[in-house]
Amino acid sequence: MAENYTVTLPHYSVGPNCYDNIGEVTHFLGKTAAVVGGETALEKAGPQLRAGLEKAGIEIVDWFVYGKDATMANVERITSNEKVKGADMIFGVGGGRAVDTVKTAADILDKPFLSVPTVASNCAPVTAIAVIYKENGALDHYHFPKRCATHCFINTSIILDSPEKLFWAGIGDALSKQAESQLASRGKALSHTPLLGVQVGLVCEEPLLTYGRQALFDFREGKVTEAFTESVLDIIISTGITSNLVTTKDSYYYNSSLAHCFYNASMVLPVIHKHLHGEVVSFGTLVLHAVDGNDEALERMLEFNRVLGLPVTLAELDITKPEEVDALVDRAVTIKEWTCVPYEMTKEKFRDGIYKVDALGRELLANK
Image (cartoon, rainbow, N blue to C red; front, side):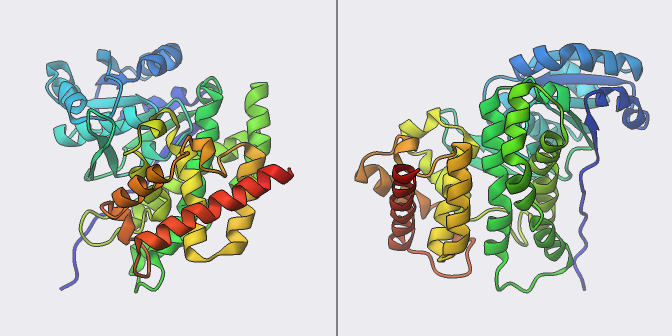
């Protein structure tokens, strides 16, 4: 008998005044809400979000900072809060780690979760997966909620007020989705849902190559433009839809591959912790293409990274010693994404890919 399963896909509102649409969604969910997020995120989104909730007739039963990282300790701070337990719905406000923390707590409490991203740095606001870290910053585990966010409110004016580096890194993170989903699924007999997801993944790269540079210029100018909005939607929605369609807890996982393997493994190095997730992942995407022998894609992405200032060398990630690369490679073999390739991976192949990118990157920077 065929397996029974449920797929949830993102519902979202986008625009500089999208909090005005909260009532259209919450009308079916209840009348009380707990709002939990990052400290800066709650400050910046606060006035507009409070106004949107008031317009929707939603009573805010609690409003507090979740902590500083996506850890189980911070998840438990939320799940043990009596006001949160009594709320009809939970709003998660902030970047990826804040959203993942609140998303996990809402899933445990079986509450409707509404995401309010204040940065465009990854697809966490709409995915049915959360990355949980240990207290020391290392990867702990993935949490797989039963569904993605009930709705996502993408206020582009709020995102425009976020740190430029987070948007910059978001472009770097989103560029990995197409390459990783294609590589992880290559040679697999795909059923309907992952097949659909892999095809959606094919639209994650080109919009960023087309709009990414202009979007950064517009961000600096403080303008909500087509290029900026298209890039934000690519980072949050296109990659998020792909993720939801190619990810299950047990049956299959085509969501990530060697780019995120590089990032997750690099967390063993203290020097990496000062670099942003998408920044490191963007270098990992170059490593993926090098390992896969796709020189055309590698050349194209090296040039794009150079133009945007994303890393093309190890030195830009403060990795300067062979023993640091060796430690990263040793850690990589223990990461789930190490196996998300259509061939046998070896330490030598991964290490050679890293050094190939570094050599080409150093040559590119020397000749620019």
